[in-house]
Length: 278
Image (tube, rainbow, N blue to C red; front, top):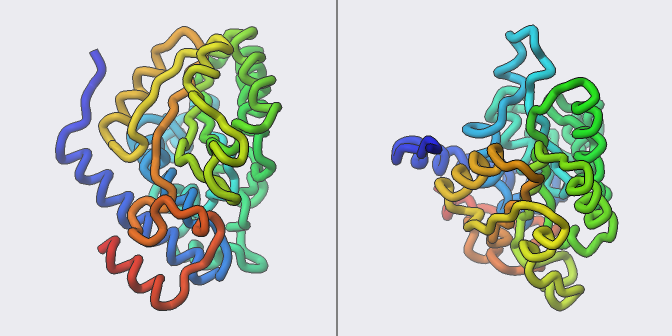
């Protein structure tokens, strides 16, 4: 039987997410560049993953069996502000480094680099590549008799890339059951609705047709996210979790507005957003 989060744990995670949302906006406002919409839609998923589900480096650093860590790939690399906020919370990077986001000489580039940032497994940014990298990683771990989990966070717009489905077929054919893909299904991309640009339809049905276990959840419900991820860890096939989210979640004027895919708030908008997240 799966352990459930207590009400105190849920409240604690929600408070962490609120703080990280403020940090995301502060990073982007300070840099005058970045992607608020997709970062805000993904932050609840990332926070539950790093604080409650994934076995990762800070915990394993004191353990000589370093390879026992789980792996995470941010396939939607443009949402790097969300990843940096979570990595700062976990202690991979200093919080004062967040204000260097997208600045010359900073380790926190617009897309995460594994050469610069501790805790970033692979550099990402070119959409549609994360799941393929997860397949290669899973095959490599298999050769070393390591069966730790590989979590991949993808944007729903990425599902329009053919490479995603080649990787999905590979994962199923090779029974790479340690891959858990999470789709941030906010239904918007830079040019508008995903269904208008190139209809995705039921992402769950598509993954299921490729031989995957699938689940569909509310990507802002802490309890649902946790239970889905923990359940996926027990599955005997690769698993896709379709997390229905709201782009720009937490800031009223950004929510469900594709204009905030890659837009910087004005001074007044920034102050309003921070006030809403207090």
